[in-house]
Amino acid sequence: MRVSTAIFAGGCFWCLQKVFDQTDGVIRTTVGYTGGRLKNPTYEKVSAGIGGHYEAVKVEYNTEKISYEELVKVFFKNIDPTNPYGQFCDIGKQYETAIFYSNDTEKKIAEKLKEKLEKANITVNTKILPVSEFYEAEEYHQKYYLKYPKEYNYYYEHSQRASATEMFKRIEKILAKEP
Image 1: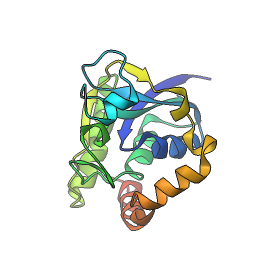
Image 2 (image 1 turned 60 degrees about the vertical axis):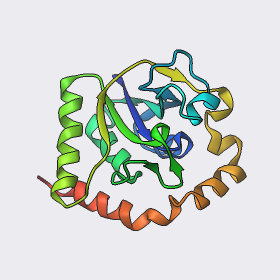
Image 3 (image 1 turned 45 degrees about the horizontal axis):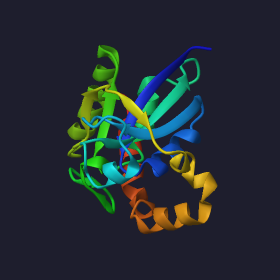
């Protein structure tokens, strides 16, 4: 088995972690903070917008079962790439969307899929950035959807993500088309 890592910021890291945990070929996910200037950030600081970090998910995956391109597609199908200010009810830089690449191949894949959506008249505000130091979030945030299912479900339903299914389906259809 060959394992690789990808990092995505898609608003609330709880929601994105659940999606990737349910993706075949994903071995492990960790929620945390990346892309900022503050060393050893905490949830309190990041959620207050201090330090410039994104809430993000580190995805470890088996490259024999899923490709980086497929992971980027999963990411795009579960965010609102048109929002430049955050995701759904979460507003602020820490909730903006970004794909963090670790090499030129990953960068080209992310750019290709972003361009594909833009050609279909979807304005994509997702940034494509080089990987930077990833700081693991506090333990109570890891697998939040499993530890606190009532609280997670309440958040998910009231965050506007649950009502975005038509947009998610449209993005999925666009990304499924051959170039």
